[in-house]
Length: 594
View (cartoon, rainbow, N blue to C red):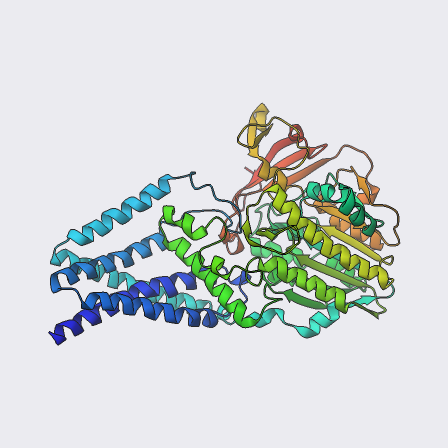
C-alpha cells in the first residue's frame, strides 16, 4: 500500500512538475527573451520569486494524487498530462494577436471565434482524457513527457543562444556618473530637446487654452511657438525616433536593424551637434537605449521604471507583470479577459498603489523632479540635452490631483487630458527652474511628441461614421475608412522656443512635419549642415504636401528583420480635415513599393 502511494506520489510530482514548468519557466523565459529590451530585472530575480508558488502547486497536485484510488488516479494523471499538452498548444500555437497590451482597451467581442475554438479544443481534449481507457491514458501521459523534453531542449538551446540577454539587470539605468552630468547646463548656450511620448497636439492646445491653468502654462511657455498642424511620421515610437533625429523615413527597403544602425550613426541632429562641439547628454528609457546609443553622445542615462521604488519592490512588480503576461498567453481566449482585468491585470492589480502601477509615469516624473532639484550651471561649452519621457503615454494612471488614481484608467480623452496636464505641469516646473538659474533665454527648447494618444482629436472634420471611422481618398478614385485612433496617432505635439525668444505663447498654422525637426534645430543652432526637411520658422502659409506612414504593430517589430507592410498616407492642407488625406504607396519587405 505504501509502495503504491509512493509510486502515485512520484508520478504526480513528475507530471505536476511538467505543468509547473510550463507556467513558471517555459513561457516566462520565452516572454523574457522576446521582450528583453524592455526589461531591467534579471531573470534570476524573477524566477526566484516563482519558486515558492511552483513548489506549492506541485505539492497540492501530489496531495490530491495520494488520496485517489488507482483507477481514478490513472484518469487524474491523464487529465494533468492533457492540461500540460493544452498549455503547450495554447502558449505556442494558439497565440492570437491582441495588440500592444499597454493599457489600451480590448474589444473582446471582436474575433470571438477564437474563444469558441480555444474552448472547443480544451473541452474535447479534457473530456477525452477523462473517458480514455488505461492504454489511451498512458499515450496521453507519454505525449506530455515527449513534449516536455522538446520544450526543455528548446529552452536550454534558446537560453544558451541568448546568454547576454540574461545578464541584463536593474543596474543598467543607475549610471550615477552620467546622471550627474545630465544635471549640468551651460552658461553660454543650451538645447533642451524633450520627447513627451504620446502627447497629442490638440490636447496640448486645449490645455493651454483653458482660462485658469491654461494661462499659467502659457506664461511659463514664454517665447514658444506651438505648431498646431504638425504631422507625425509613424504611429509608434520605434521608427519615429530616427525620423525625428534624421528626417528620414523607413520604407522596408533594408533590414530594420541595419537601418537603425546606419541612420542613428549617420547624419542626425544629435551627431551634427556633437560634431559642432556641443556636449550631448541623453536621458532616455532603458527600453529605447539600444536605439539612441548607436549615435554620438557624451553621456547616456537610462531612465528606469523603478526610479522611485526599491529594487526589491521593482523585482516583485516585474515578476507579477511577467506572470500576468504568462497567464494571458496560456489561457483560452474567454479567460484572457479576466486576466487582463479591464486594463488592470490580475496580479499587478494586487500591487495597486503608485509604487507599482503606472511605473513609467511616476518614475519619469520623479526623474524630472530630480533633474530640477539638482540642475546646475557648471559648463561653459554648448550643451544639448535630449530627454525622452513617458508622461502622457498609456497606461493612464493619474487623477485630477496628479496622484495615483487607484487603478489603470480607460484610454479616453478625459483621462488622457488629465495625465497630459500632470506631465505638462512637471515640464513647466522644470522651465521655471531654468528661468531662476538665468539659462532659459540662452536655451533653445523643443517639447514634442513622437505620436498622438489614440483618442478622438478635437475639431476633426470629414465624412464620419457611427463606428468612429472616417473616409479618406483611396487609390484610383476609391475611398478607404480609417478609425479616429489612426488619425490621432498622426498628431504629435510640436512646440519650440528659439534662443532669446520672448513673448506670449503663439500658435502657428504652418504645415509642419515631425521630419522637419532636424532642419529646424540645425537652423536655430546655425549649424553648417542640411537635412531633407524644412525649418519650421521659414515656413509661410504655403500649401504643402506631407506624408505619414502607418503599419500594423506587432510585438516582434523589435526583433523582426522587417516591419509589416507600411502604408503611406499623403496629407494636403490641414491634418484635421480627413478630406485632405489620401492613400499613397505601400512598402513591403525589401520592396520599394507595391
